[in-house]
Amino acid sequence: MRLISEQAGTRSRPWLRYGATTAAVTATALAGTRAVRTDSTWYTSLRKPPWQPPPQVFGPVWTALYATIAYAGGRALGTAHDRRRSTRLTASLAVNLTLNAGWSRLFFARRSPAAGLAGTVLLDLSTAELIHRTARHDRTAALALVPYGAWCAFATALNASIARRNPGT
Image 1 (cartoon, rainbow, N blue to C red):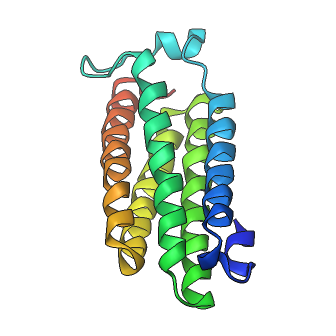
Image 2 (image 1 turned 90 degrees about the vertical axis):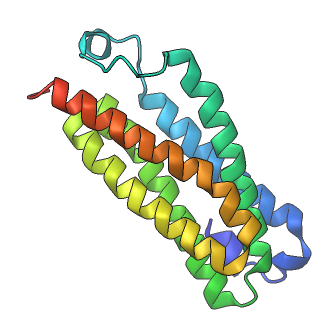
């Protein structure tokens, strides 16, 4: 992600912006996916709320959300008219993607719904900040991130319900 803010002339080279944001989002998705084990004995034994979507829903939803994050990031960086703003937007996106990938490790790899809940609350805050910062540069890009923010809020509610139903795990 650092390449985006330091590369001169990225506004004139959209392929560089979109390529960098797509690469960062893809790395996030791969890092997160490596930790997820919905078929593990631990996960299947957890008590979950009846409103949890079936496991096969998560892949397509996250694929669409990751695509919008890459699009919104690339678009907003194209409208960040100075190095300082571009650097701040890049940092905001990098922090958000790090928290995004980190949730899977907290919840699944550590087998801790409580740790996952702490991580997803931080992700919610980061996502709200990312949408706010993106809106300063490009309203369309910020609007593209709203479904991501909504899904993260839903994921927080789901994680909270699982943590509440499974104390001590």
